[in-house]
Length: 87
Image (cartoon, rainbow, N blue to C red; front, side, top):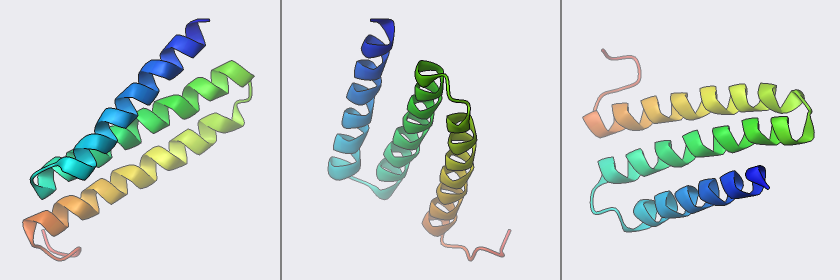
């Protein structure tokens, strides 16, 4: 029962982030919405690991979180107008 409520709330949060991603008036708003949705998806993957008692999902969540973080860094570099090797 508790997992269903948490999954429902996370789905609501991801839906609201997707709405901000589509509607967001500026690129930083869209980048923040993407980062927020990626963080919530990572949490959902960890919750699935607990629900199914399968710790392989934890590995998937770690890799997904790392890749989404790197994607956020790439987006922020793009928004700042710098190349990936620049400081």
